[in-house]
Image 1 (cartoon, rainbow, N blue to C red):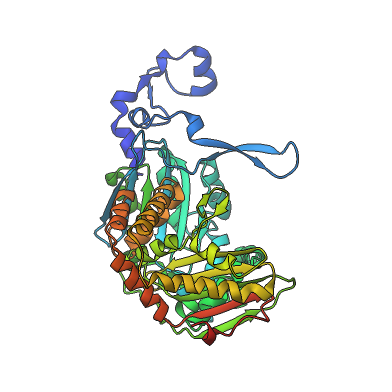
Image 2 (cartoon, rainbow, N blue to C red):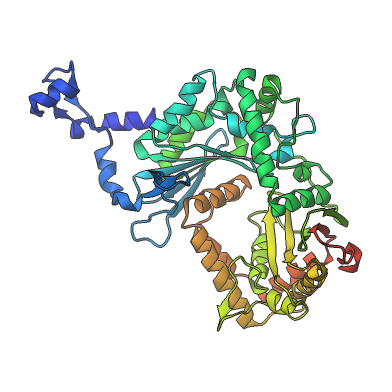
Length: 508
C-alpha cells in the first residue's frame, strides 16, 4: 500500500529501540519482540506535525437512539478546517487511464474520500430498474478478495462509515477516516468496481432494504413530485427513470454482474476526490486501486426535454403543492450559475432575507398580495451533466389558493426577463457567493461540487473561482437566461388539494 510504503521510508527518523521501553510494557505489549529490534509508531509523525488540530475540532458527540440515556458516540464533523486560510486549495488532475482526481488540501488528520461514478438511474433500463438502490445496500458484501463479514467490519475498525449514494446522473461512494487508514478504506470503496460478486444469498436483505428506504423517501411529497416531474419532462427514459426501487423481481447475481461489467469499467467516467490530501497523494492512491480500469465508450442515454405535460397526485388534507419546472442548464455551465443567481434575485432561496420582522422577497410579496392563508414559494434549480430543470415549488395551506400562489410566482420569474437594477443584481450576487462559501466549507459540499465539475469534463473549481464567475455575470446575462426559461415548455405536477388549479396551458 502506498501509505505503508510512505511510512516505511521514514523509519530511520521515527524508529526507536525496544530496549528503551520498560520491562512491563515489553512483557505485556511487545510480546516476542527482542529488545534490540526497532518499532515504528502507528502513524506518520511528520504528517502529524503538519496536520495538527485539537481533537475536539474534528469530532462531535452524537447520541445513538432516541431514548433518554442513549449511548453517545464520536463522529467526524462536517466542516473542512483550513488552518487559518479562507478556503482550501483545490487541485485537479487526470491519470493516464482517464480517472479524474481532485485534491482539496486541508489541515486535518482526518481525511475524506469520495469516488464519483458518472452514472446513475438514467443508465438503468426497464429490466434493471432499481439496480443502484439495491447495490447501495450490498456494496460492502462479498467480493473476490473479501468475505461479507470482512467487507462490513474492516471499515468500521478504521473508524470509517462508507456511504453509497445513487443519483440520477452521478453516484457517489464517500467515507471519512484517519489519514493512515485511507488506503485500506479506499480499497473497500472501490472493490466492487474491480472484483464484484453479488451472491444471490446476500441480495435478499439489500433488496428488502431498498424497498423500505424507497417507500420511506417517497412518503415525502416533494420527493414523489420530483420523481413524477422527471418522468414527465424526459418521457420516462434517461433522466426520466425513477430514482427509487419499485419491486423489480429480475435483480439477481447475473443482472448485478452484467450491470457492473457494462457501467463500472470506464475509467473516463470516474473521479476520485480527496479532502485533506495533497495532489500527489490522491494521484498515487487512485492509481494504486484503479489502475486496472480502462477508458471505455460508456455514454449517457439521451435525455431530450419534452415538456408540456402535467400530472396530479392525490393526497388527503386541505393543503396543496405544485411543481412548475422548465428546462434548465447543465452543471458547471454559465447558464446554470445564472439560474442560481435568478433564484436569489426573486428571493427563492431556502433562507429568505428578513428585515424588520417581514419577509422581503419578491416571491413572498407577490403571493402575499393575492392569498390570505399560509403559503411557501421558492425557486428550484437542478443541474445534470447534459440538462437541467429550473422553476418553482409552491404550497398553500388552503388548496383553493394554490393556483394564485403559482400564478403570482410565475409572474415574478417572468419579470426578471424585463430587466433588473444594479442594486438588485449586486445583492443577489452577494447572497449567492455567501451560499457558495458556506457550501464549500463543508466536506459534503466540497466533495460533491468538485467531483461533478470534474466528471462534467471541466476543471474542478475552488470557491474563489466560482465567486469570480458570479461577479462576472451581467444584467444582460440574467435577462437572456430568464427569457430562455420563459420560452421553454414546462411540466406541472400538483399534489393534494388542487381542484381549483388552472391547467398548464393557462399558466404559460
